[in-house]
Each structure stands twice: as C-alpha cells, then as structure tokens.
Amino acid sequence: MRRDRFYLENLASLEIRDIAALHKIRKVLRKKKKDLISVFDGKGSEYEVRIKEITHNKIEFDSPSIRRKAKQIQPKISLAFPVLKSQRSDFLISKAVELGIDALQPFISENNVAKRPGSSKFAHWKRIVIESACQSKRLFLPGIKSVISVEAIFDAFDAYDLILLADPTSDLQAESFFGGIKTEVVRNLLLVVGPEGGFSPRELDRLKVQNNLKRLRISNFVLRSETACVFLSGLTCHYFNKSEI
Image (cartoon, rainbow, N blue to C red; front, top):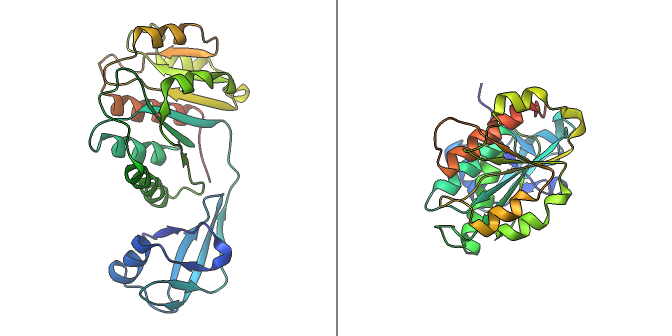
C-alpha cells in the first residue's frame, strides 16, 4: 500500500505550512482531521503523525510516533555536475537523489552551454530534491549547493578520499575498478561529470595533477551529461551499498 510522505524540517513545530504539501494533503489526498500521514525530518528519522487541525494555510499534528530510524552510512557520495539546459538538470537531480547521492554540486565551466541559473531556479532545484527524497523513501535529505565554478571544485579536491571522473576515453572500466576497490577506506567520495562541450585544455591540465582522481569509463557509448550523471551515480551507490534501512 502506498504511503505518502512529507518533509518536515522542524519537527518540534508539529505543523506544515508548505504550500505544495498543503495542497497535496488537502486537495489531492483529501486528508481530514484524525487521519494519519508520514513525515520525515531529513536527518534519519520518519514519523507517523495524526492530523489535529487542518485549515487552508496550515496543518497541525499530534505528537509523532517513530516509524523508521537509520544512521547515515559511509561513504558520503557527492555529485559535481554541469548546469544543463532546460529540464535536463531537473532530471539528473531527481534521479541522483533517488539513487542515493548525499550532496549535489552544480558547476559552470569554460565550455558550459547553459548559463548560470538565478535564485528562482535554485529554489526549484531544492523543491525537486525534497520531492524526490519523499518519493524514494529516503530518510536523509541530500543537500544541493549553490552553483560555483569548476575551478572551485578543483580547489576542493583534497577534501575527498577518492574522486571518480566519467571519461569515455579511459582504459579503466567501471566493473574492474569497483571490483578491486576497498570500500572501507573511502569515507568521502566525489563523482564528477563534465559539461556537454567537454573540459577545456586548461581544465584538463588541472585534472591531470590530482593523485586521488580516477578516470572511469562507464560505457562503451558516448553519453549525454545527464545520462552519465545518473549512470555513474547508480553504479557508485550500488557498489558502495548505499542504504538508509
């Protein structure tokens, strides 16, 4: 039986004021006073709450009872992806959250086709993260960071134990790499997918000097950036057995 879930950032408030969530609970699900719904705090816990009061601008609950609780397992997997045109960024964000990515870092590089998004687009992305976490039954809410330059990502490479770069020219196949890695020594992992136009020569020079970076061929075909993001995210989360059960 399907159970709809809703993100409640401040569980202590015992109320929902988010417009989209209110509309779904009142108009789509047609929930009434005394009905039960599930909420999660994005920090590892899910609760069942009973509706105490429902109005056009808020829903109040009785004290919650715990349904599920989990600890976040290692490694923390982040995805650095290029800002893409139209709804392609929306698609990859949604699927990366469903697959288990812990943090999302959009970037702009020299060969980016899409322009840097405004604040309204970033708010839209945050909504996609929440909706995808709700749908996929995740207990932890992934973070999405503000758009930065690819150079800023390169500068932060030393913070990661391992960096995996999707590279169709690499001789290192995904299957052989993941089969030989010692997963217990990786605590902080970054996945990087390049822009539609590829990295510039200057950016490629920066990548060559990174000792903790592995170039990984994830397919024998040329993938679009959003496809590579989803495929690399799925492969990595599977091999590291990402779970919130």
